[in-house]
Length: 627
Image 1 (cartoon, rainbow, N blue to C red):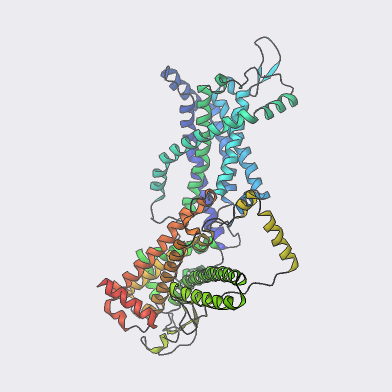
Image 2 (tube, helix red, strand yellow; image 1 turned 180 degrees about the vertical axis):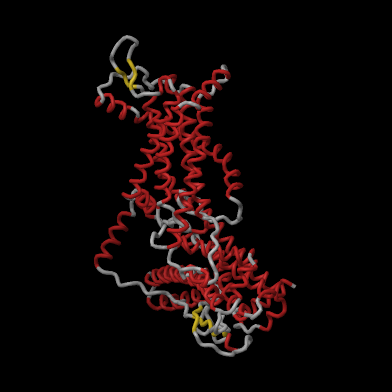
């Protein structure tokens, strides 16, 4: 995710990451102190419990323990940060989910997490004392033979198991995805509100995995035990954990539960701190003359190719549009010399292109699904026609085809775009004119501005032709069809529910910020825009928002009527389905709020804007609803 060549990553992101890990290491001694307090808990002798805890905390062994655990988890946290992403991957099938986890580079992460968990638990066994300290113990009080300490072995293996589970869930459930906060709060209050829920979540997760590990050790525990006894020349263990009484020792269970909770809290709290620091709002400069590099300005960095920097830029744009009157003034200002609104042109162009790209994808997806259903219905009609006689078959086929066409035309909603209608995609051209704001040029798709014109780019609405299939592709498809006859293969290769819809809305947080920023800037422009640069592009903004809102409503209606829209309970799709549903609902709500807020601000003046008939009719309905 982090592009080392970008100046923002080198000068801002790395420093934020280092600050988060520094705070993590400062909090680690307090967490280790709480662990020691819980691990030596004794209700029968509280005085001995407290005195033993204090002697451990102020001993040199405690500082060595904190140093070793801190170094191990520091590098593990850095390795987790290497996998941070702003856009969660969307898997089409269950087989792709398995392949994503079993990649060699992902397996390296699993190996590192397992070793880190085993090493951390090995360090914690020194604080437990007694029979849990070392791997080998004397077989008898007088003999020189050394036996295998199975309690110690089971604890270390449990740490390895927790590390493997952490690595798998890190990618499977999207823990490596950065979620930018909706509500802006200070880092102190965010950490304060997260500490206690994190402890309870660590205890719950540790209890669940302790139960799973017990069952796994009963079945496969003999493998590492026999291997160690054979290779380390150890005698048969004197404390075999084969009986129910020895295996379910309450003291041993308590040690394992607290150790797993401590390990879970260390990893997840480090992730939480890094995400808070990395997703914090950064205030980009607005004036070119005040900075060394020209590309660092907000209006220019919106078009960057780095996904993380782009998210930061749109987050800053949304923040300044609502809370910074001084910075909004820079957007409304004109360039000198020349008097052109270059900043507003760049910001408006990037936001509208972002909205139109999603509209294009929604329309293309809807056309693809509609054409697929039409093809299935036509094939079914042809099969029926071949089974009938020649004379009656032709009549029935023509009748069915005509009914099918009329049904699709009547049931489908009107197409948002056509070649004769203006599109909501813009490019800035240096053609300065004196067209009126409410002239007929808006209908032709050209929008005059003080600093230039915003012209529509063509939007593809038709179906893209598929490439010609080669004999090799046909052979592979035939082999795949034969494999799908097995139930397990069919289950793994079957498309996940709503995978196409999740792919469309997985990164719509940028679109939410763009809609909110445009809405706030348009509403504030009525009082703050001295030169009227925002009102010049108000028709284009309204059309883009209404087009995207219509496309989302059409997609949701089609999704609710389709078969895949009702199947939303797949285990492998739960990692991103909830977040995508929230983003999709948030985008739809932001569009409605922006449209109604603009109508409430400008009122009946919007009726003077020249728009195409469909958009003008929709705008009049919205204005009537407001009244």
